[in-house]
Length: 288
Image 1 (cartoon, one colour):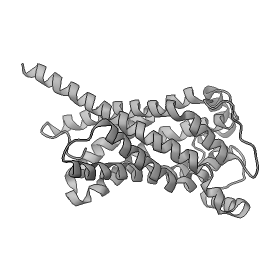
Image 2: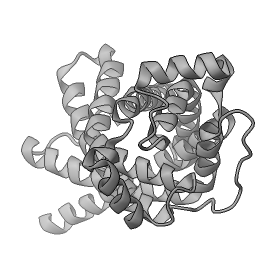
Image 3: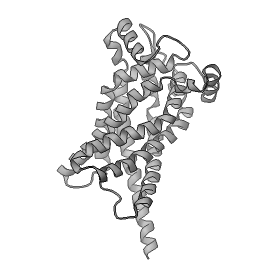
Image 4: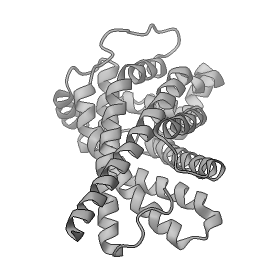
């Protein structure tokens, strides 16, 4: 990915990369969310359950439609910001610091997307745990009871989880692709991109599970005062449930993000290549 898009006017390139990244990111995000939503619901219910509570197995697609309304713009914003930021950093930094470029671009993309992701995640997780029946109803009641800030419950813990997650996942993915290309001495095919995406997703998912547990607890407590913040949440979980509680839901999380990484990066690269081919065809037509 690192050296794509050269040889054209930079301002046009920036807009083009942003637009194509947004289309590819939105497409990949919607495909992943639809395919893997039930696993995500199970993971959320496992993490939200305290002590020996039983897990509800009904309504595993609860909240999907409302979530897609947020996932589409969030994924589009993330990749739309990530791609041009990555390109600019790769041009600016020495070649041996490409990992820094990928890590930084992932974090910046995550910050931009969080403005949409957090309200989407709050609504989704409240619906997954049975608090609301529809997304519009959830938004209306959350705002009525807690104000607009209720939609950003757990924002700090979300950033604490998602910024490292985005930065680590995209850095691992990009670096593995660079290494694989050097060994193979060719561009990667769709199954190879998907496999690398699965590997990057699974590793990152496992590493960030404790942060995900805290984020879930803070988001689903609503107006409850069980946890007053990230540090208090960590201390309370450790005291009341022990260190093992920080790994709740790790199996479905690793499975979900591993498969999700495979689908996301596979669809992302395929969509990007299709858009690039279309651009080339249009350029040929113009030249004729």
